[in-house]
Length: 390
Image (spheres, rainbow, N blue to C red):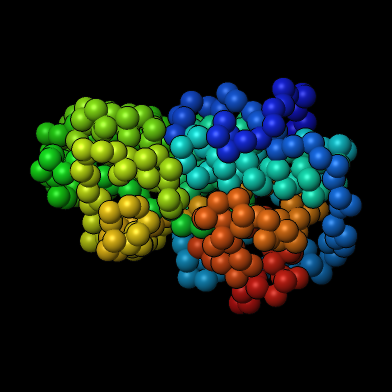
């Protein structure tokens, strides 16, 4: 694992808070992270007592059935092999960088909380959370060796593994999953006065499709196309982050916007509470079969639960996209194991990070990844008895 020079560290706050090595499968601030915040420098407790991987465990891990462990996401043919996790354990104290997202979404506080817990609970470790544009930025940071862990949606992770869509210029990313965290909701929000009741109604309207190069933009383009429109020519296209989209909608400068985010997303909570402004969430679940036929089952039926946002008491049928915690395929196996052990040994603390973090569990963490799991993760979940058998 690449070592980084000491970065300027600031106390983490919520307010200013792998592709040849892997087997072949099958945010509001959209600039690459320019701000790094520290998770804290509290004295670390003793490192978890973890056995070194045995030959049997490694063999078992490499043979583990990775093709969509619980029927969740995209099937793939081979796992990340133990040989992929060949880098030596980093010297201590080790510094880890966690790629998160923009300050108005969920990735930022979730990733920041992970960094803080690793700093406080994993001995000789200092982890920092970096503000990024989200999934695409995080994958590219991992690819470049400028981050050690990251959060990503599974559609973007699959694209990264294939070197397609937003990754055509950079090539395949050697990423492997540590854990599936929670599902995001693909928000499609329109002004009540816009006359937009479906994707097809967006023709001729001004629409923000997310920041340029983001996973939101990729998903928005796919959804617009599934709705029968050309995402380049049939709308007046804006590339805005969720915070920028909310601001523009408040000023009625856009008619609709897309956003992939956890629930609730703070910027959207703010939007629906704006006096004198009425917005609607478009139901999009009927387009899931078309998306799945073309892109695989990374997009699923997922209802926005009633009550998530003030004034919207009924469930809204939409599209869900899982989110993962991932690392480079060549991360040292023991380090990957220790990271997971630390997080699950302190699961209640993790669940306190954000409402979406309450969905993390051993059973859910192995379901629905679109890319292979890291050998260190496989060993951890096997020991816990939740890794699926053949």
